[in-house]
Image (cartoon, rainbow, N blue to C red):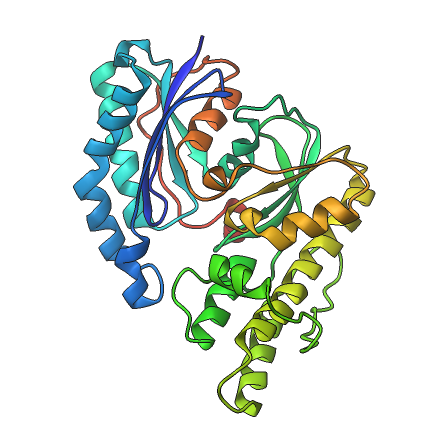
Amino acid sequence: MAIYLGIETSCDETAAAIVADGRQILSNCLFSQIDLHKKFGGVVPEVAAREHLEVINEIINLAISQAGINPKDLSGIACTAGPGLIGTLLVGFSAAKALSFAWDIPLIAIDHLIAHVCANYLETDLEPPFLALLVSGGHSQLMHFTDFTQAKIIGQTIDDAAGEAYDKVARLLGLSYPGGPIIDKLAKSGDKTRFPFPQALVKGFDFSFSGVKTAVLRCLEKLEKPWPIEDIAASFQAAVIGALVKKTLQAQEYTNAPKIVLAGGVAANSYLKEQMLALANVPVVFPTAQLCTDNAAMVAAAAYFEQVGGQGNKDTHLQVYSRSFEEQS
């Protein structure tokens, strides 16, 4: 049995988890900073990094204790290297490097985006190939997986990510952070046809969500208060989810992928899952709500599949990075 400790500190959640053989969750511990950042309307990097420093050791110890293992049982330590906030990434990465050295076990640096997709391997028997739609606060991508951790990006947002658009529209409506769950809830009782917000015409399989955000702003400027917030939320969500589903189905047909996999925080959106399940001609897979958002179990799972069951060498000379490699090139 290959057992990995996963550590995740890419943004505003401090997380540690123990996963066996890339599938079985032995523990999954998380400290969220959402309440801390609500008053700012978003994550403040320096505040987030300081908070990670306060709790990282406690969260790691809790994960090991709840799993009922000894550090000598570990096959390796996995930590998120990026993309993410440099200051917060360094907290988790430094802790992982120190433990790797102290316990003399391999350190595996994990890409945050790949890890989100790997959340779908946990407590399931999912295997590639498949088409993954990764949608979160910072990223929106279509990825064709031909191996467990090997993927080709065939489409992505050219401006705002879907989750970012949700947060910005929530702010326009006077709603709290994070905006995604609140808008999803309000939309359930709204009329999604009342405001025909546009879907951007982008070539290929790329997305664009800045235009629909601006359309909501212009709509609010013309409306008298009190605003019909439920109808605005439902109409906005219909435009965003409509674009995501349309491009995903086109990409699935193009790649002939036998399955569609959802990943990232927005994968917990009820309307996205409803529409994808209703319109896709292939099976649609998505994680539980707890595994959609940032967590460490997905990081440990990614390490297992990258190391092919725990094979690999210790490397303490790796670096964190703020943007994906596609964005840097």
